Image 1: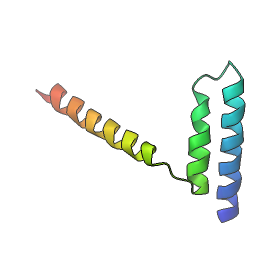
Image 2 (image 1 turned 60 degrees about the horizontal axis):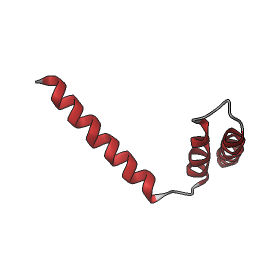
Image 3 (image 1 turned 90 degrees about the vertical axis):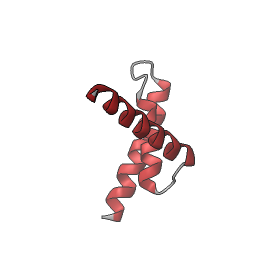
Length: 66
C-alpha cells in the first residue's frame, strides 16, 4: 500500500507541474501540494489556510441560521 501512495503522490506532483505550464488548467497547480502531502511533505501554511476556512465556514453557518 505504501508503494501505491508514493506512486499517486508522485503522479499528482507531475500533473501539478504540467498544469502550471499549460494555460488550459488554471487551478490544477494545487495538485503539487496534494502530491507532496501524500508523499509526507507537510506545509505549515496549509494548516493555517485550513483552519481559516473552517472558521469562516462556521461563521457563515451561524449567520444563515439567524
